[in-house]
Image (cartoon, helix red, strand yellow):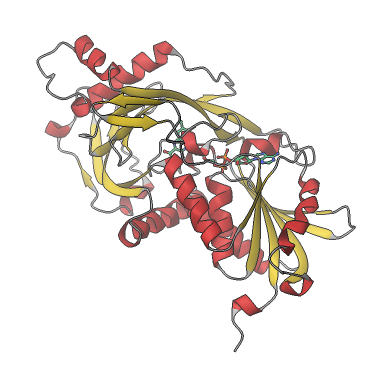
Length: 391
Ligand SMILES: Cc1cc2nc3c(=O)[nH]c(=O)nc-3n(C[C@H](O)[C@H](O)[C@H](O)COP(=O)(O)OP(=O)(O)OC[C@H]3O[C@@H](n4cnc5c(N)ncnc54)[C@H](O)[C@@H]3O)c2cc1C
């Protein structure tokens, strides 16, 4: 009986090595039906132990987020699972829920994955009468009692959420993909058509034309890059700037998200003693430099939400407590979510390549502020689209 590995595989080139490209490539490669090659200008590498470090309370921090922010969002992400789908957006809901369940399974089955299941609190300035869709699906959901609510908060909920240490997770995903037999080529392309030039990469290790079927598929996971590729030129793409502060606070054990106000405020422990404090959400803002006033606001407001960010300071006045938190700052980062007017572009496309062959494309980009928490859902959607696609 022949197995998938004996059968000629379909060749797939994935453009982009952010969370969307890597997860999509991994799902396709693991299926055994495809040989995937990722082409990407940037990927996240493990931090070099010889790079500059910051030490706080004996914790040595080597910055893992060194990729240019406007080129790649994924390592700048918070990130935790808290749905951003509206109650009407059932499509995004399915993708997020699928990802929630996949992450939950990962926490039980693979301790090497930098994904952790912890308690999460959502806090609202106003009564959340139109209760969120995801509260029906998350584990251990309960409404908070009035005495659990911080000052100024009208309603709150607690449930099991997932925190994803995004730079480490990118490295983990890449390793999973390479271990599954995936190929990688570091390169920048100025148009999708140029990806055909990398076909020779499929013929290493004694592979020849009998190893593959004749067709070639491209999956475009280039996020903000889709606004610059000359044969995609998606004018709906735009950056959504987010500033976050990374602190060392190993005592923080749950996420807190305050919804409402000028910006969503959040506290996300990453499972290694570091905690992300956020954030801002500014569409069409290209400024890569952190803003000091914003940093001060984030520190002050997240400390109100999570007093345990600084220990043994309950007798101090609020300003002194913020100054204590300031001492725990490891880095201030600005990232750019790949925003798209109208939402994610997940659809088929095609063009005739330089060789005259028809090349099929699936676009999978524009995941704004929910790319990590929906990544497995979108990757599986691409897999289903490929399965149904006939040349
Ligand atoms: C501050 C902040 C907080 C966030 N918090 C969360 C959260 O809590 N939960 C959540 O789910 N999401 C969150 N996000 C959003 C999430 O980070 C993004 O949705 C996600 O990272 C997008 O992934 P991506 O793979 O589509 O894009 P990217 O990570 O930007 O990757 C794009 C890839 O394409 C490559 N590329 C592009 N153009 C070319 C080209 N021409 N040639 C070669 N390579 C190319 C790049 O090199 C890169 O590898 C947050 C984002 C920010 C900035």
